[in-house]
Length: 106
Image 1: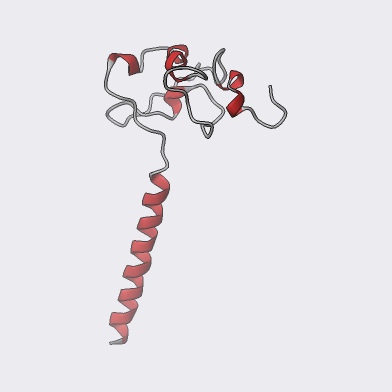
Image 2: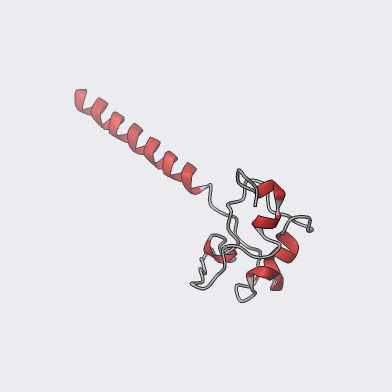
């Protein structure tokens, strides 16, 4: 009977750990849609033409202070496409979005 209780605890903590991993993994950046506007070959400045401050689909105020979109956002198949030369700050990007300014502004 005691052995059964130990295995129950092991199973419980194993499932608890799995739940914690899934909870953390669910906080990933959203996948990009599978359409011509969201191809990984487009420059990040094109992303900001829709997702920059004051645009049709602006980024939320909780967005990280970066403009290298393909380092975090996955394509429609779930694959990342980070670019070594990608800028982390672009005109019209986070530095121009007052909701995303860090303490002290620009």
